[in-house]
Amino acid sequence: MNYMLKDENAIYYECGYSCDNALYLRLGKEAFFITDSRYTLDANEHVVDATVIINGDLYGEAVSKLKKAKVKKVIFDPKEWTVDGFERVRSHVKVDFKPQVDFSHKKRIIKSDEELKIIAKAAKLGAKAFKHLAKEFRKNGFGKDEYTLTHVAKGILGDFGKYELSFDPIVAINKNAAKPHATPTSTVLEKNDLLLVDAGLKYKRYCSDRTRTVQADKYLMFDTNQSFKRKKIQKAYDTVLKAHDNAIAKARSGMKAKKVDALTRDIIEKAGYGKYYVHSTGHGVGLDIHEMPYISTKSDTIIEDGMVYTIEPGIYIPNEFGIRIEDMVAMLDGKAKVL
Image (cartoon, rainbow, N blue to C red; front, side):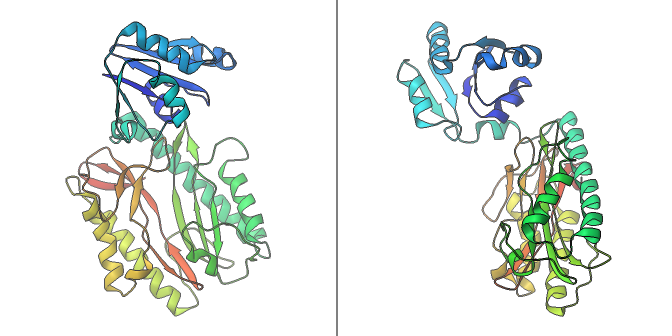
């Protein structure tokens, strides 16, 4: 198979190393990692199963290799390439470039045993960080706005520089939590507020992802056993938790992804909150925070052992509150195991 990659994580998956200026070319049994001189030492130390080529003109080097190999077809993922970068290769060679969207994601959809160990470690480190975050918010969070709380969350989640973050954490209070991808505001955390935190960290480049919605009081803990002062919030929370637990308990290898989605959606709809459940049930997690499989109403992907994805149902009442509970699961021996 012949293919060329530009995405960092796609390249890392192939050869164990990537950087922000590289091109990977697989031509049959030969593979080439092309980068510039800034990365000479790291590339030569870490790249496996590929020849390292140092040339600042990545595209020119790729053209040279393609001409020499005289290949007729090369696969590429159009999501990875700028128009300019792709044309700098395509226009100089007589090759039939075959677009395959999500080419690398499809290769990576089933995790190896080693990948599963790394992702499980990332998830455990993420859960541990949530415990530290709860302690910090209990002691020093009240009276602080979402900007400050988000800044604090970044430091604790990354262990102050030890780990990269999977994404910028979401720290949302009360009505701001009704926005699934809320950005920080000047809202200040007060006792008995609803607080939603969605965050994750990376371990050996693999992501974790977790969301908890809690009653912010002196007992603040990021667990799923929550008691809210307002009955309206409690009812919605209990519905989301029931949907979350149902999908984890009943998901099976061999199901279509849309069936797993229905395990959360049916419960929320029957409780009368259907129009407030505005996103899919989950997404795959690996080197990218969002990758295959996508657990949505339209996905016919067959769930298989070795897949890792999130279960994250939610209810979002505009201008009032939002609730989401999220855990990562791995399909093992036909069932979903929380990581």
